[in-house]
Length: 141
Image (cartoon, rainbow, N blue to C red; front, side, top):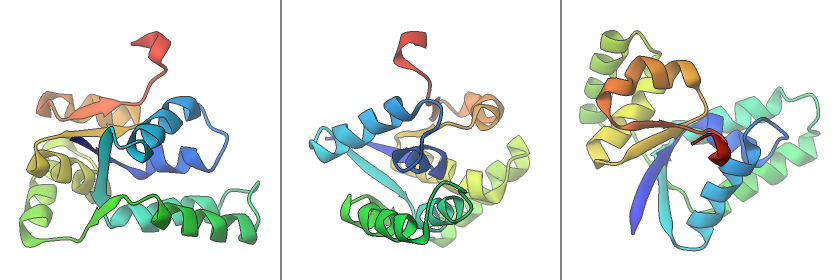
């Protein structure tokens, strides 16, 4: 089974009405159907819930349901390691990206898979790694 690393910009779309939500849902459905395995640094949980916390359209109850759902989905959340963080530091400096973004990218590189993100700027900055894919409508691909 192939795997993908996703970042919070993709996972947040599962719980909100945002651009490219349909594409994010397709990734989730592929994971739930056993077609792909989703992995991510544990950072994902913090970033998703923080983003939902500040979404004016979600109640505290909606946020708590999203927390429960996020863990029921079965994403393989990887804890930080020295190797991951050293690589993230190098990538952050090389591509002028945040450590947060670099952690997701590092996870993809270390797993020899791709990071899927809705962050166009991150995709552009780190494209040369060959390990990043922007979440865009399938009709645009």
